[in-house]
Image (cartoon, rainbow, N blue to C red):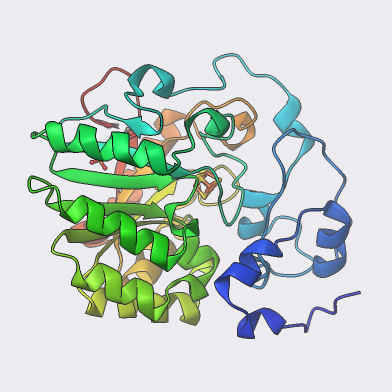
Length: 328
Ligand SMILES: *Cc1c(COP(=O)(O)O)cnc(C)c1O
Ligand code: SF4
C-alpha cells in the first residue's frame, strides 16, 4: 500500500510521473481513502500522482477528481451526444492536420495525454489512423510550406508536450524554416498536470525560436494551480512565452460564479490570461457535465460584473462549419 504521505513523485522526472499514472479504481480508492464504484466505460482512467496530490482525500465531489473519474453515467446515451461532435474528420487534410479556420492550422502531434479528462471531445478520436510518424511530418511540412496564407501552427493532441524536448526542438526547427509561419501555439495540459514538464530545455527551446510562442493551458479549476504550477508558468513567461488558458464549463466542477472568479484570480496569480470558456462539446459519454446555455450566459454575466475585463474568458461554443468559435 502506498501511504498518502508518499511524495516520491516530487523527485521524479516528468516521464516517470507520466508512465506511472493511476489506472484503476482500486488504487484510486486506496490513495484517496474513498469507496468509488468501478465503471467500465471504454475510455481508460489515467491520473498522474501530481494531479492526485491536489485532490482532497475523502471527498468524492472534489472538482479535480470529478474531471478524471470514470462514472457509470458515461454509458448512458443522450440524444445529440456523438463520437465526433466537431466533425473533425471532415476537415482533416493530411493525417493529423486539421485546417478549419483561416490563417492557422492545427496539428495532432500525438494521441497520448498526461491525464484522461472524462469530458474530452476527442475521447473517440481515431488517433491510431492519424498519428503522425516521421514520414507524415515530411508531408505536413511540405503542405505548410506550400500554403502561404497559414501563419500559425497549433500543436495539439492528445497532448503535444508528451513529446520529449529533443523531439519538440527538432519539430520546431522544421517549422521555423517555413518563412511565412510567425506563431507557434501549443495547447497542453501537461505544465499543469505534471509541472515538472516545464524543463529548462523546454523553456530554452520556446524562448529561443524566432516564432512567437503561445501556450494555451487547459485549466478548469483554481485548485489545479499550486505553487509548482506557478513556478513553471513564471519560467515560461520570463522566456517570452505568451500564456493563455482555456476552460470547459463543467457541471459539478466549475459551474458557479465563485468557482469561475476564483479560477480567474488564480490564473492571474500564475501570470496566465483567461482566453476561452468553452461550452461542452456534445461528445458521447459526457452529457452529465452539460450546463444549459441560459445558465452559462448568466454565469458569465455575473463573472463579468465581478472581474476586470482582462480576467473574463470569452464564452464560446464550437459549431462545425463556422469560420470561428461561436460566442454565446
Ligand atoms: C479551436 C481551433 C483553432 C483555434 O481557434 P482560435 O479561435 O484561434 O483559438 C484552430 N483550429 C481548430 C481545428 C480548432 O478547433
Ligand atoms: S488533456 Fe486534453 S486531449 Fe487529453 S484527455 Fe484531457 S482534454 Fe482531452
